[in-house]
Length: 519
Image (cartoon, rainbow, N blue to C red):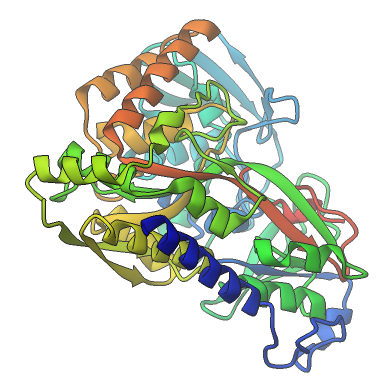
């Protein structure tokens, strides 16, 4: 009977998802390519790139967030000292080159003549300021946990000394949220640093009318190759099918995160292309381990056993996503597939709840943004947990507000996509599960505190042998499967629709799209 109800819910959800492909204002129900009534002169301007994003940025201050919607913007305004090339080598960006003097000492030689958009030249003092500031921010502090000192040894030379050898150190410096900021600009902006970005990148902020449109314009003083499109206009369109409609109608050139139900629609429409990229990210159901009853591992395990994850993933993603059997995605280093993490067993769930003192269940809330896909996940979770006596209230809010609530530790259950800025699992596992990050503003939204996990995570940073490091990460993933701070749902795949003025676009496994590379 329970299985029947689950399948019935899938059918209802599938019908509702398909219904979302129907008509809306200004667009025919057949989804034709005729321009909508709202099409503007901008659509004819080949100097303007128009993007429909799935969520609005929360801030344009790199050190104040790690969310992808913000990084998609400030990745085009700011630049990191080094970056990971296509061969996964760490190479210079704002640093023309670097050298490792010994096990703990690195020297970075900056490019000369690189200008911030406020007219200031990039200097070593800006790097020192950035990294010192990052080390004090809960969002980015873990990337600098191993750093003992950052010193300007000249106008264009920076020395970084570590407390101990660190395997993921250089990789961490490629992460978008560690981008270099201008000391003068940040100091002058104060609390407004999130809306007054000053970077060295190919674009600068022209205007940001929150809830309406964000506009980037070409940085004429950019040290590298200038972008093809002089202006980028980004609008947040949370509903996936509406992004598809905007693309079809010619109102935008790029639509991010095309929903599963619209993939063939984009593929089959003349003049549009569908791009796809396996992500270094998973979608998950997180649990705040600091709040009762989720502070009891038996309750978390019960919730895990009560959820039929394969059925849920099939309902939401069809055949376009693989089930996530770890906190890191299957295309990252040291991934371990733990199939037992999705052992669907309602009787076992009930037994665990009884053992924990919740035989009659309890009430709990689940936090998610307004994205339809996440709402559908919340609805299925709500239905499946009801079968074991857990009553779920769904709290929805716009993405930036949801992030603020989760960063502050105000969630119980939460649905979110979480990814790694690099191939190294440290950027997910240390950030999200080390106790030092279980603080207000920290990335450990689950507030997971476990001495053994801390020990293993710290060990993973000082082991350089690949096999030994892989073994440590295997232990970490086993421990997390047992403790269940997250219930991993699926490995994400990014689908992007392009058309209009766009011929090609470079995809990114972190969804940090470089609009300056769009042709």
